[in-house]
Image (cartoon, rainbow, N blue to C red):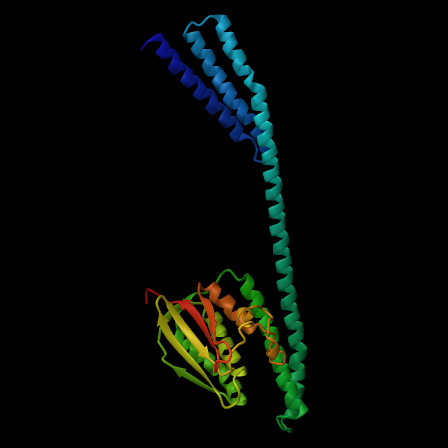
Length: 334
C-alpha cells in the first residue's frame, strides 16, 4: 500500500473514530438536555473532519503551512457549526414545548373525562334512589286504579326517567370503554333476547313484532352491548309505529357482514332529518313529545363502531316506514 493510500485509510479511521466517540458523548447526554445535544452535534462533525485532515496531512508529509491552512479552513466552519447547532436547539426547544403542551392537554382531557364519568355515575345513583321510592309508592296506589289514573301514569313516567338515566350512563361508558369481553354468539339468539325484552312495550303499544329470514350467522362481539343495540333499534321502531302496525326483523349475511334489519311503520323520515338520526340528543320536530332523550340510536352507532361495523338508515318520507340496519363483521373461523 502506498503512503498516500495509508494516509487515506488512517484519515478515514480517525474521522470515524472521533465521530463515533463524539456521537457516543452526545447520546449519553441526559434526555432532559436536548438543546445541549443539538448544539454539540454539529461540532462533532467538524471535530471528526479536523482530526481526519490532521492525520492525513502528517502522513502525506504536507508542509506545515499547508496543513495549518487546511485546519484554519476547518476551524472557520466552527461558527457555522454553532449557527446550525443553535437552529437545531431552537427547533428542539419548540418541539419539546409542543410535546409538553400535548402531554398536559392529554392529562387534562383524562382528568376531565374521569371527572365526567364519576359525575355521571354518582348522578345516576342519586337519581335512581328517589325514582325507586316514587315508583314503589305509585305502584302501591296504582294497584287499585285504572291505567289512565295518575298513579299508573307516574309509574310509566318513572320508568321513562329510569330508561333515560340508563341511556346516559351507557353512552358515557361506550365513549370511554377500551376493553371488551368478546365472545362468539349467534346473531339470531341476540335478536331473540332483544325481542323478548321489548315485547311488553310492543303489547302495550298494540304493535306486532315479526321475525323473518333469520340467517343464523355467528359474530364475535361483546354480547351485552350488541343485545342492547338491537333492543334499542326494536324499541325505537315500536315507539314510532302506530297501534295496529307491525315491526319486521330480518337477519342476513351480506358479504363479510352479518346484518340485522328492523323495519317500522313510521311513515318515513324527512330527508333533512336523515343525516342527524345518529347524533346524540337529536330529535326531529315531530319527535319532541316522544319518549327518551334521543340517545337510543346514538348508542347503537357507538356499539357498531366499537365492533368495526356501521349503522345504515333507509326510508325517506313518504315511504311506509324506515329500516335501520346494524351491520357487524361476521365471524370467519366458526
